[in-house]
Image 1 (cartoon, rainbow, N blue to C red):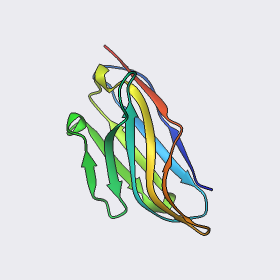
Image 2: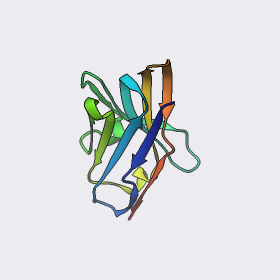
Image 3: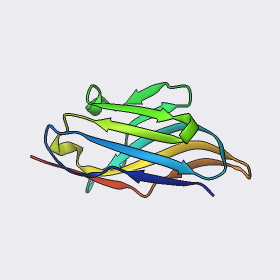
Length: 121
């Protein structure tokens, strides 16, 4: 069993910053890629950023230069530092893990429960 637990969401004014964290729990050997998706009301879930175990990053165009993704492989934890937040960043942010290898099996993917980020204008 693998669980992703997110923290760090909340309410912030436009121009402010927030840091999201997501820790993966379970008997984990390795996680290929970890990342963050978001879903705003009435919209589809979209990729925000992801990072491989080797540190290669990928960002949505809308967040490039404002958000930074990082991870601690030893802690199976991924972070999302968000700066210069805009009202359009308001969404539920979901942590995602791709190809999670454990002592029992390899899970193709796992999702966190989501954390709400609200940016006021």
